[in-house]
Length: 307
Image 1 (spheres, rainbow, N blue to C red):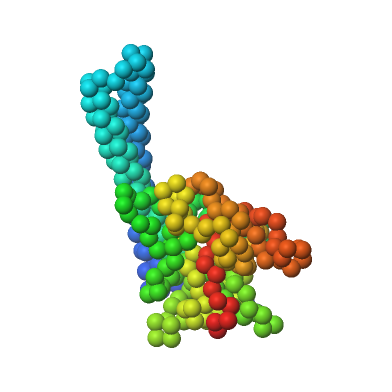
Image 2 (cartoon, rainbow, N blue to C red):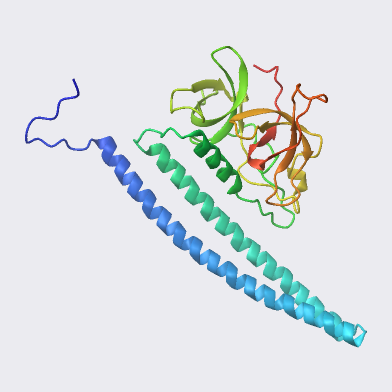
C-alpha cells in the first residue's frame, strides 16, 4: 500500500527546512538578477571603451599613412604618435579591466547557481550519456580565460598551474579522483565533491557518471586533483600551459575517465585545445593518434604508486 494521506481537512504545513530552502532560493534569484544587471552595464561599458579605442587606432593608422606620403618623420609626427600610442595602451588596459570585472560577475553567477543546485531538495536527475557529454563540453568551452595584468603571474588552477597544498575543493566542484572499483581496479574518474572532512583529510565524492549517491567514494585528499578554473592564454601566459612532451592525465574524449597521455601540441590560441597522445599498447609506438582535449580536463600526472 502507498503512503496514507493526512487526515481529512488537515493541510500539512511546510517544515523549517523546506521554508529555509525556499527563502534561500528566492534570495539567490534576487542576487542573480542584480548581478545580471551589473554585468549588462559592464558589457555596455566595454563596448563604449572599445569604440573609443578603435577611434584612436584609426588616428594612429592615418598618421602613419601621412608619414608615408610625405616620406619623412618630423618631430611633430614623433610626438603625435607617442601620445596616440600612450592613449591606446591606456584604452586597452581600461577595456581589459572592465572585462576582468565582467568575468568576475559571470563567475559569481555560476557559483550562486551551483550552490542553489546543491541546496535544492530535488534529487539529481539521471542524464542520458549524450546529454552528459554535451554538458561536459559546454563546461570546458565556457571556462573563463585568465586575463593577466601587466607583470602579474597566472594564479593557481589557471591552466597547468597546480593548486596550493592547502587548497580544498568546494562542494559541487568537479575534480579528478582516483577511486577503486568493485573489481579492485583503480581509475582516475571525473567526480563531484560532496564534502571534505578536515579531521580525516578525506573527501567524499560522487562519480559524475552515476546516479547521485550510488557511486560515492570516501578518499584521501592526495587522491583528488582539482580541475582548472581558468583557461590560460597562450599569447600572454604560455608558462601556464603544459609544454610539448609533458606526461599528464587527460580526460579521454566521450568518457568520464582520465588516462595517462603526453602533450603532442599545447593550445596555440585562447580558445584552442591540447593535442594529446594517450598511452595505448594496441598501437606499435604505444600511443594513440592525436586527440583534442580541452584545458579544463588536462591535469598534472600524479605518481601511481601513492595509495
